[in-house]
Length: 206
Image (cartoon, rainbow, N blue to C red):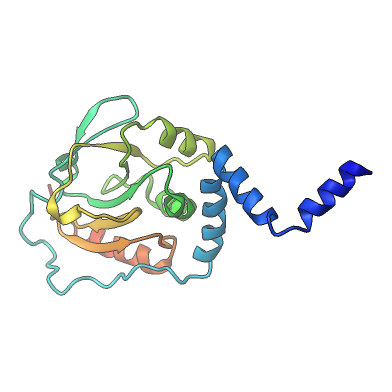
């Protein structure tokens, strides 16, 4: 009876929310729980990126060699020069495993990636910004995401520098940033696919 009384007092006290929050933080479960809640917010369609091409966009224009001037490391530990992707449409997402909004948007990025996974004219780059890729790879593997994951090695060029995670860019085959969205976003949409398809049709031959 005494134990039941104690539990009853806990459940009806004002301390319960604090105890729950404290438990989540101590166990490290707060990030996935927040991500799950934010995933529901994303499903409302309130966080869709702007997909209108910039007025400066010119199909087949001069190739910029600066936008993809950075290096990254793949899961096998091999260094990859992002400049190798010049001539492709690049979907670049900056993220970290501790970032709840980053995790919240991953299911819809995975759904978008699945539609283009066999198209070698487009590259999806999920670029982890942490010092180690271990936690990020574990999370991606645990949820069955198939998109390519890399770890940033060094800094990013000025066009891609941001203080916000997640941040997503779509880069044209000529190296022009045509979409920049800071914060979580819903990418599994017809508008995003239309943008990618337009860029693929305008693709510059390497």
